[in-house]
Image 1: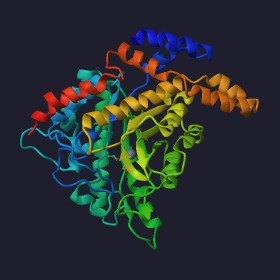
Image 2: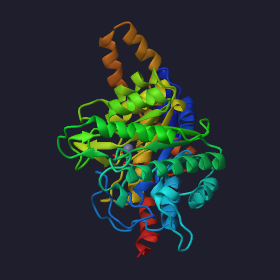
Image 3: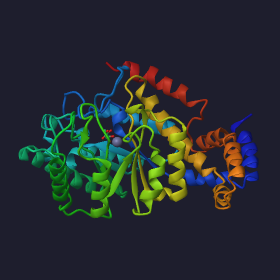
Image 4: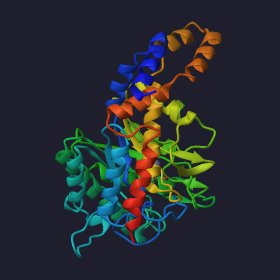
Length: 416
Ligand code: RNT
Ligand code: ZN
């Protein structure tokens, strides 16, 4: 059966549930994800040659990793051709593109060091998001914004201020607001006697950064919390309570990374609480496997539940960033899978008969609610998805991997 016929049959079945599939796909088309540039090169970047540090790790050594800005952009082009919809690109400061022999340290970065990315964004007609890079750097060996060494702390405060200016430049040039997310790896491997002083210094650093004037209609600042990192098992300075409170008090966002909680916590459940007190929210969608492992996002219940909260509460209230990095498989496929899978989760959310489900909840008719919820799981969401892909001019589920494989054969294998 051709895609269109499968879609028409699915449309009829969804209509019986009171769901309009045409509306679902037109809503999905409006949602943009912010694709992280760092899946393409295992979070290395272009401004330094050292290993990845900061309590995060990529494992695996699949060949053909992008090692130049040109290669990374080429791979991103490929991913964009395999993912339906118009998205954003999320950059880290370590992806600065220097001309010739020029190099500046992170506290001295300027908008011009990201012009190549702005040109790239303009070519695609997309917006950019940004992140200060406070890891994989000699100044980040012990701590960054919470450091007891004032020289170190100032270096990173200056880096974040530089990043604010670059974020503003991104927004001005692309015409799309830029989300700037601050994440630091600072923490302690073992039990420490003084937990408050590092947090006090982090608070002071953030105050200094936010005291810099920036256009709040163009740049949305977020702070990303975490429960632990490798080598930082006992204390994370930027904990959930710290950033939730800091963000609330200072009118910025607390970014929720789905890998940054205890494994049995339901991350989706946090969103409705936070949305009552915040107009906008920022997310990092990733997949923790036993720990913050940043596996590629798959179409699982965690992803579906997060997607449902986004759709029910209004996708325009969210900055939806991706944050996974797998070096053990073809990176273009990893990127594409994660993006497509989260879009599937969003489509699935758009296809829920929410009014009916909520009415059953209000009536406390949990008997019928369970049966309906389970019935919905057997609906032909894949037929709607393939139709959406075809409509958006990208390969369907049966086709995309072949395109990705072709890219590996024709482009990636030619890389030294
Ligand atoms: C680390 C955070 C952070 C990073 C990126 C590279 O645990 O999730 O967001 O993954 O900044
Ligand atoms: Zn993250």
